[in-house]
Every structure is written in structure tokens, then in C-alpha cells.
Length: 173
Image 1 (spheres, rainbow, N blue to C red):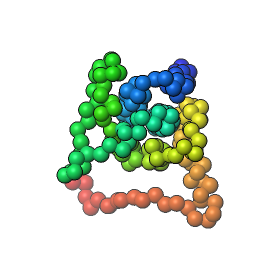
Image 2: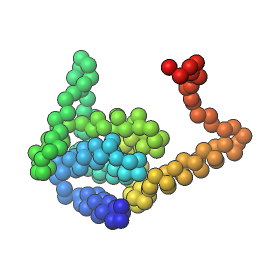
Image 3: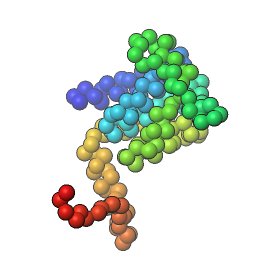
């Protein structure tokens, strides 16, 4: 965590700042970033999604990752991405799809869900995400941000209610 911000800044600058990178490199990084967003904390997921969105907009040849669909019968497709190799040319990322975005659309954190839904749907007029805004997030900052949002929505006299399901037990066993 000590060098996290510096590493993320260098990663962002090296990927977004270089327009001469081959499409398979960008596609491989997008796939790996989205997979990390699935398994990582929400703060890392927000950064990964913002960077993926910027990469997809900057490199239009990777749009096939979002628009690729499954077969006609059941809509499913096999993910051909190979993540165990070190050579990015052999990951087969361009033949795959970003199914991880569909999974992230159902994430428990509302910010990640919203960012995943918008990823890949932006047009050329939409400004790129400022990656600096996503680097410093922690659990505490995300919690405070959500708490302030809920408090602000409650000032209008209407408080948002949390849905709970509870059945009172009749006995111990």
C-alpha cells in the first residue's frame, strides 16, 4: 500500500500515454484488469474499470472485446483467454470477450456497478476518466463518500430504507 499510488500512476501513464502499443497488449491488460476487479477490493476495482474504459476508448480496435457475443442457442461462449502465460501475444485476449464487465454490473458496490455499466458505451464526446481521482480510494474513503451521499439524500425529508429479510425464530433448534 505504500507504493500503490505510484505504481498505479506509472501503469496508467505507460498504457494510456502510449498510442503505439499493439491491440493484443491493450486487450490483455483490459482482461487482466477486469479479472482483478472481480477479485479485488472496491477501491482497486474502480481504478481498474476507469483505466479499462480509457484504454477501450483510446484503442478502438479493442471494441470487439465488448461487442462479442455467444452462440445463437444459449448465448454462452467459451473464454479462450489464457492468463497463465507471460507473453501477452499468446493470451488470445483479442479472441475473447470482456464478460467480466457483465459480472461487475451486478457488484455490491453501487459505484463499481455504475462504472461497469458505462464502460465501453461512451462516445467520442465523453471525456476520459481522470485516473488520479481513482488512485487514492480506500475502504474508508468509499464508505465516507457513500455515507455522505445517503445523508444528503435524507435531507429532503425522505430517508432511504434498507431492505431487510428477517424471520423471528420460534426456538433454538
